[in-house]
Amino acid sequence: MREPVLVRCNTVEHDGTESLQLSVEGGRLTIITPTVYNRTRWSAEQVRQLRDTLTRLLGQLPGGGGVR
Image 1 (spheres, rainbow, N blue to C red):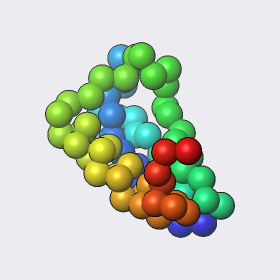
Image 2: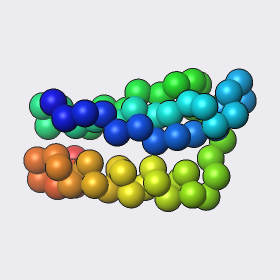
Image 3: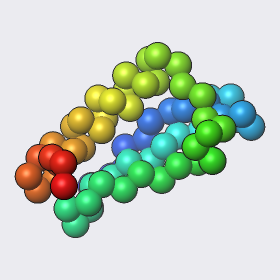
Image 4: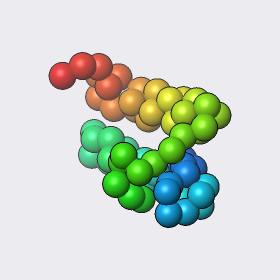
């Protein structure tokens, strides 16, 4: 397993001190969220970082992470 990638996000409870944890293991992408999704707020830069990280990690999956 590779080290998880952390993507910073803001939550209602903790402004900017939380992170999504993304990892690829056994041909699957796992995302561990710090809070209830609808209580997470994203800046434009955080969304770009999340997009770029997801794109990179999906490319590591068998078949390039295409639609299943």
